[in-house]
Structures are given as C-alpha cells and as structure tokens.
Image (cartoon, rainbow, N blue to C red; front, top):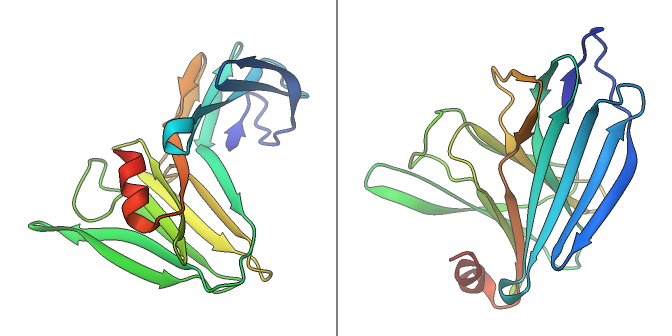
Length: 200
C-alpha cells in the first residue's frame, strides 16, 4: 500500500485499532498512527467446505482526500518445502485460451503475473498455483481490470505471493471507503484437479 497525504508525506505507520470475529469472518482494523482518519480494514472469510480463505481489504478516509498510488489486497506466505516447487500459471490467445505454463521456483527469484489491458482477455489470468507433488497452494484475484500478482522466493525458499491492482498509471483519490478486489487462496491435497474443483 502506498499513500500520499495532504501534507505530501507518504509514510504509513499502521497500528492495530480493533478486531471483530463473527462466525467465519474476522475483521481487523488498522489506523495510521499520525493520520488517524485513515483506516485499513482487513477481512478474512473462511470457506471451510472448499479449503479457501477469501481476503478483502477496505481503505477508508474520514478527512482530507488521500492519494492512493498502490493498493494490493493481500500477501500469502508459504514455508519452504523439501521438494522442488513449480509455479503454474495460465496464458493464451484468441481460440487457444488457458494454456498452462510451468516455471520452477528457484530461491531468490520472482515472477510477475500481470495484465494492463483494462479488460478481461485470453492473454493472462489472475491465477496462480504452486505445486509440490500432489500438494497445491493456489489463488485467484477477483478483478477484471488491470492487475498484478508477484510470486517471489527468498534465498531460504520461502514463498510470498502479493496481488491486487496493477500500479501502472494508478491514482485513487480516497475520501470515503474503497473496497479492493478479493484475493482468494486455497489448498489442495489432490493436485491441480482438486484446486479447480475448489474454485468452481
């Protein structure tokens, strides 16, 4: 998250303010320590039947407008595994959509999945899957505009996946509440076919 306040500072210092737990939904409220009218609400909803976590983020400003220059919905973190992990993505073109692409996840590297076409298309899909044998961690971004998903590994093999709005030419004047696109993530112990079933 990157924000520019009325005094032209862009430092965020978000601290815990409160939380709410209602059935299968957890809400965590963060406030900026200095710009106290700026609030970030993190929402975690469980879909136990399908082994999914649905993550939403709401940005709120109750004061002078804040210029949002970058807004990612969520970050997912995976511990390193002993086996070689493979990143599975989908790309394509007209009449040959959803072609499966495989990339080995080497420590200390990153992969950027993105679309700046502004509309859904066959070229790229806001979806990732990380295969480790029959275990698959997967996710999708519920957004049809410009988007990006970054999959990176550190030198120890820990994996981080961040997704949300693409920040190319992105400016959002925030003076109320803005809902970021949901980022859905899940786990399958029965391969990619299990991941597909859980998302349908």
